[in-house]
Length: 343
Image (cartoon, rainbow, N blue to C red; front, side, top):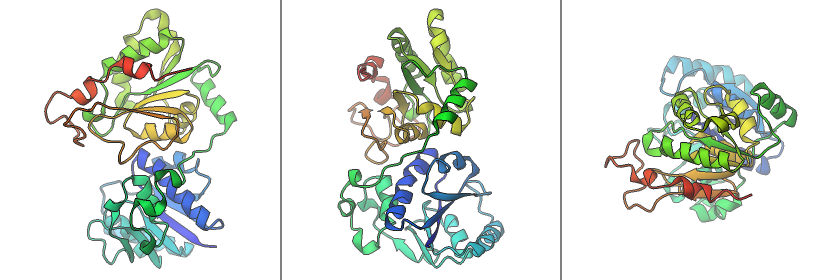
């Protein structure tokens, strides 16, 4: 049995997309054992991936170096006798633990000063358009991976698919007093990256009002950082409609958010981690793009609408609008989104 260690990414969307690699590795080696070293928050996602044998908690935060602690972690992992490691982050420090663990084959893309840390280093990352393609390409011999066409395109790689337990989903809905028997639209109005990814709160509020008038329940998702935004959306609604809108931001765990997103017929989202979760649980995703582009990290689902303006200054990939007008998002009207929701 081949034993594989993955050093996983540190962002929700990237972790979801990395499942494409795990699925590809299982296709190639059905009896392989895949463990993922990742931050503790990743466990709710990794436990929904049937390809994963064990999620190993990474005790160091994203920016910490701590060479001695990395050596200790690697030494502890030696007893597992991994055959192969795949290092998904680009940093040099992310490649240290597999080296210290004595893993004989260490595969990853060229990053910051990784020569010697990796012994199966890939140099042509920019020849692969999409992040999911870049992950999957690592599962193949480097000589076979010239560019995206070597994989047959994005549609020919395995897409993320998170497992759900209906009993747990129903228990989660009951916990939050939610009704699963009527049509639901999820809204994800947050954006960890910055305001240049964030469709205006007033636009989300107007869309929520239109949805409520059309007989939908509206569930609002996000982290504690998004609570001010989601509270504004709720408070702007007519009193008669407020019993059909539910503010879940900051109240659910990531695991609970996965369960509840799976019950939404549509999910309207900024370019965020929750957008990729929604795609992986089978929702119809309406992805709103401002400063970023779906040409790199699109939601991997066939039920998808991408919404963006054709303004010439986008995509700029900035956290804040460098021109100060944020037209790439302000000029997307709520009615543009509402017309995409068809029963």
